Length: 277
Length: 151
Image (cartoon, rainbow over the protein chains, first blue to last red):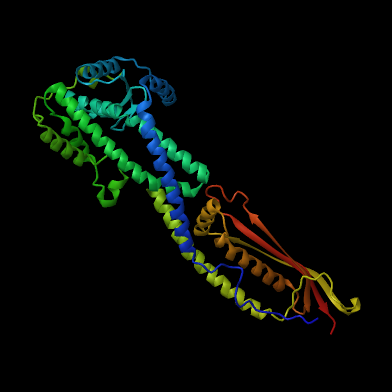
């Protein structure tokens, strides 16, 4: 038998199709599946969330708060803030929640609404505000999230998202990273819309409490001074709308509703502003 | 945001560098295969010759480890979800096997007449290749018996 050596002319062991084409086809297929599931489940959450009673939410909230290791609801400063919030609620808010205020030491200028009526206010936020009106606006804003039940929707959607991506791809996958970032953009838009809705709620409540909306825009104007412009692309990465736009929106909304935008600003109660305990 | 940019850079870098290295490697493989065409390699265990005609016989082997790039890895993990041929790894395995055979031939003494009983093995290096931040590689090994016959 004669041995005939041969040179590979046409390599049959390698597919000829473009890998870039394959990449885009597979990626778009995956994105479609995830988006489809995400919207269906997100829709389901929007149906379920209004059905969750405040009692059930209290139970959920309790677990969550324990996990966050919130400090005990004690101290004069915390109590003053609690009294202030109770007063706000009694006069202008008709919600089935017993709001529980927590002051947490942090350098972030922020406040969070957590299930069960818990409102966490970071100490830096209290140090930043200059009037009681501003503080009332911030608290009304968080209560607005409860009124729209954004706190539950937000948590629900995050859980759904994490569940889908982990199920499909495993929790330890670079693709999850890619998807998370992509879908987060859509989620951020949703979150920005929630913020605007809560701002409008806060404005209406502020008008109810003080008879004017003075001070509401001040807070955002102050934040805007420290904010870098996010630019055309950067703004899609914000969970909150840009402060300067929020301030402008508040003024427009006040004017449209016929609210008085000027009025006397009340100083922040001493025991809330200064006492650190 | 940063992690997305880093991932994109890695994918693009992986695609362009990976393609460039692959082309270069194939060019080298094709040239060397032509140069070694006169050294037959067969998988048969025995050949029909008298033992007294064999001047020298020895084990020769060649092995190579080739790593995949980020682009190939992402493409393969996408394939993992839908199933089907993992085309991005085909060229990797093809290159590794041909390179291993070439190295085996290079290891054979210059006066080798034939390499018989050639076997090919492949193995994955870094078995946790699917874990985060680890890139898998493939090892291919070719071995056989190089015979030098008396003329």
